[in-house]
Image 1 (tube, chains in turn cyan, green):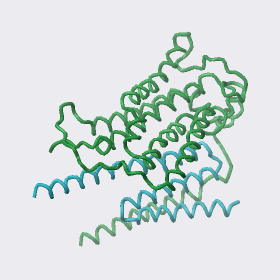
Image 2 (cartoon, rainbow over the protein chains, first blue to last red):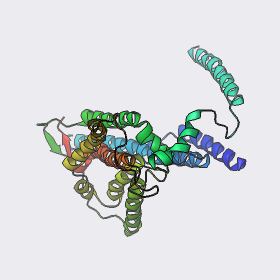
Image 3 (tube, helix red, strand yellow):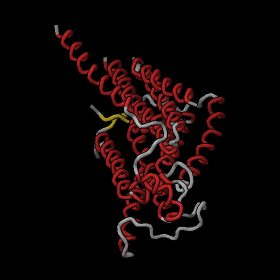
Length: 89
Length: 249
């Protein structure tokens, strides 16, 4: 059992490092979501199912969703501004 | 030169942090040991006093319900802040973005996969929300799960569908009702002569869906509030894309 726990913690560390090292924002959000799922699994393994559920809903769904929504809004505006500039020119 | 100072500062404070971290880890209590008195007390009395088999939610929605009230209003205020920052003032001149042509149907594979997933998510969300007092979960988690359904639909259908099921006024009313009903439940116990937010409903049979009095009720109210909160934030972010209108610059 101790190996499963250590393995999970190690995976969390590695994927946390991966999230920080991902440079493209959109891929980073996906990596963050994966990190959230791993954290949820870790909480579940260490006998905190309530926290695990909150972690999965917030860390793997809500937070990446919010960032994605913000990115899509910004991209929409940027694409639109560019198109408008081309039309006016 | 500045680079060197930066690295040195990092090395000093990083080393200090590493030392403190190792010191803390070395002095951690052994695996499974528990020194606080409250956990043992709660896990012993929560089933008898409140008929709630999930001690965590018995604590959240009953023993320290006042704290949870504050936490709920943190979410409420955060959503309010997002909506205020991103709101469109009345009378803003808008122009057609002209870019929203997403009535194209997606591939059949995506739609066929997404529909059963949506159905499962609905059932799972309601299960988590209604069994908050029995199993891990509760209103907050259920709210996020239920709020993800319109987004799944948004992914596999189009913005028009998303707009139809996240009708702005209805969601706003549900958000306000969900947040206020928590306070109203607390006030009801005040009117009945008991302290604020004390459990005044019949406790029922342990293990029933309708048991544990106000714990289940508060959990469901929070479920409504959280669902509406996430839908509101999502709609506010996507408003320009959904309506296809940009403010005139």
